[in-house]
Image: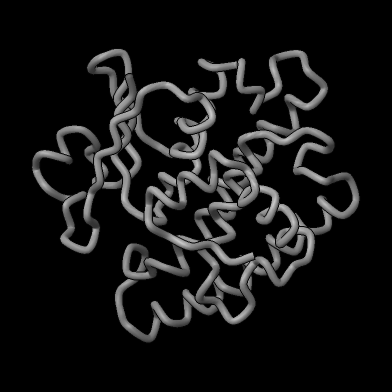
Length: 212
């Protein structure tokens, strides 16, 4: 049994899809970010950063950080085949893309959505958001080129958790002037994820749509 604390369209999307792939019993606990429930004293005892997702496993063990949860689940459940094993030729690229997506692209997306986390002043936050939007487009353009050259997936011929993660981040660009899916290979990757039952089930459970 797992417990996943989540909010719709958040960084819980990819772990939620992986839990669907695993098929183990899961208790989904919604955190209403519009009511700021992620900052409640009760939730902060689970995750002192006041963010989702948080995963509970083996009764009472806790972990947070979306990419870490994804890596943990794929290693704990190798039968789903969504991470190359140590020694596999794809292993290096898989770790590279998981790190790039969470450390570089996701960080730029946070600058776009939450400039107030980083700098004071409405004008400065607007400038940060505009700059971050341009950076995100450049990064998705880079990923689009990788997919075009050596795809159909980020690591080549095999679909892994990093592809789910990229699709999740692509949705976060939906309000940008040039959403990620304007890049043709990114659009194709997102459509591949949408066609997978585990990802479609996650979107349905979270009550969100994803264009492609």
